[in-house]
Image 1 (tube, rainbow, N blue to C red):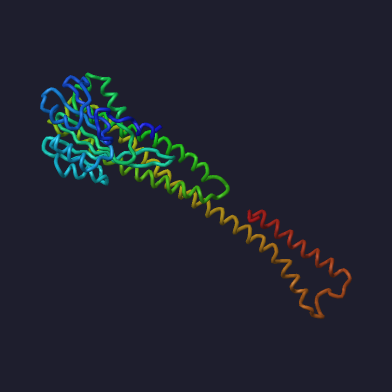
Image 2 (image 1 turned 45 degrees about the vertical axis):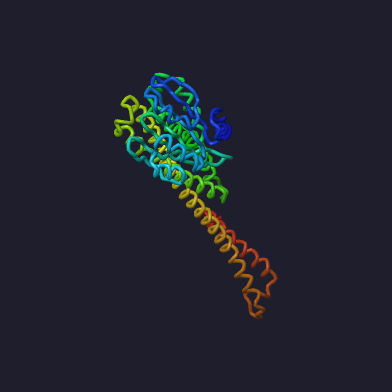
Length: 339
């Protein structure tokens, strides 16, 4: 399902396959028309219109074209081209540049990507790199609420960030279910090396997920309190809601990481206890076999003067004494829990 969503058809008006959508909207939130990248500057000359552009894995030429059309800062464009940026928010004149990490389950494994967002008073541009679902769903949701879309690019920014955070919840649920399965395996009697490996991989992915979500809280906190010229006051409560969702994910990942650490410690303790039990049993059987071995070695020395050696009942008596000693030792060791 995730991969299918990533292959949504691009905007038919755009000749560049890297451009997913390029749409002009009116100030009252109505979708006006699909436009080409070359028409962006013409639309921005109209005071009551704004633009929402979405691109995926753009080339350097496409980013340069967007920089010319929107007047983007060259440093921000350079960061958007290099897809290995830390999550951050930066101000360039009258525009914001935001980097957010995204997460997606691909072929049963979690994959991470990046979304770079340029937002001005009358435009928003999303640049996707790596594993990330298409924002067409978020865009359609905005278009269905004309009253909210009338709040402009700041509401579109909320929709994108909310979409990014909400897509992490299914991953967290999958992690929680896998953790429950691993906890059940930890307490099984048989030791499984694969369980330890899965615990380690899960903890590694949780740490990576936390590194992606935790910085987003700071970004959202700034959007809630700052940038009065770019963020509408009516949109700030929506950013606060996304912040709460990110905080929930962050707390969940922290809790699961602690549980994974505990599970690893418990698994190690159980393995140590199991090894101790094996050693106790081996030591018990060794002690049990020591008595007949000692007696047999005495009577195997081929001396002439051994106790009761010439008596006809000596051999049965020796067998009986040995069996009696072994029986007493077995009872004592069994009572002590060594056998």
